[in-house]
Amino acid sequence: MFDLLEQKFRSDGPEAVFDLLIQKARETQDHRMLFGARIMQVRHRTGLPLIETESVLDLAGEQRTAYETAFRDAAREAGTLCLAAGDIPSAWAYFKAIGEPAPVAAAIENVSEGEGALENLDRVIEIAYREGVNPRKGFELILKQHGICSAITWYGSNPDQESRQQCLRLLVRNLHESVSSAIKETIARAEGGAPETDSLPELMEARAWLFEGMSSYTDSTHLSSILRYAPELEDNETLRMAIDLAEYGQRLDPMYHFKGDPPFEDTYADHAVYLRALAGEDVDLAIAHFREKAAAPARFPGDTAAAEVLIDLLVRLDRRAEALQASIEYLPAPEGPTNCPSALQLCQLAGDYATLRNLARQREDLLGFAAGVVQG
Image 1: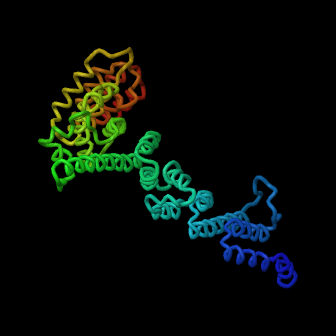
Image 2: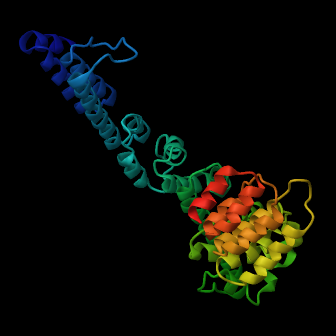
Image 3: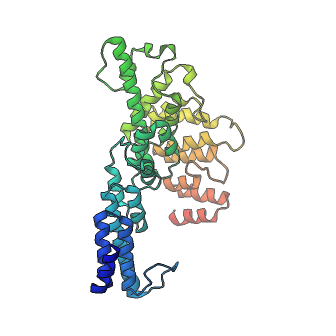
């Protein structure tokens, strides 16, 4: 090959050398040589040294455009070669460089669930989930390869709201299926056959014996952790599953009832009340339940968790005027809370510009006052 390159140069010139390199790289599926040859080719065409020595290219106008176009084309071709060979991590290096994640996202989507033999699977998961190329599929792979405990840990570090919803649905559904299957197996052994339903309330109805002797059907730390995130849910179907899981938790022996953070001290019962309200059930009861917690003396100065949960619940229920009044009553300090809208934001949501002006004046907030004057 080395002799052939010299012969090609003597007989046909430098372009023939690059073409031969590119052909050889394609035949051997050598993505590094393919990319390097394509870049060397464009450097030759633009009059640059063939071996890169500069940290920043000093090109302008048509030369820069030609180089950047060739770079993108070379990266696409090298990345596509990697994908054809099943090398997703190497492909991502090229597609990431040109800001085109779609081909890698599609390749990750086609990775078989539980495909433990896939090389660099943990790196694929990192690319999919942590780097945001295909978060939902990445989370599916985490659940299949590393289990629900790792999935919960990974979920907690995800700041992206859209993918959090997708992943939380997977978490809740996975746990619901696990509990349902375990209970059905227990019923089948005791009664000689498994019920047709997967509904937890139906499976547990009139079967108090399922929870005798401290019986449980999943790791209770997983259950309490997922319920802690469940208030984020936005779709009714998964919300219903989370409610069922909270009701299942309430039937467990007291040794499995771990104390939660306020205002969800009773992890299972308090979350059940909150989640039912989001589903449109016993709404007034839930508001009264969390209003009582918000009105109770705080554990320590500045502890506003119960008030924030109440306000956020009222906003989720589209009871904005009530949320504003709760904010004024329970969060009088000018600094806004961190986990729910501030009083001024609630004025904006409720369209109450008179209160917005009054609050802003009390809090010496010229910007908020101006917003109230202009909009009101």
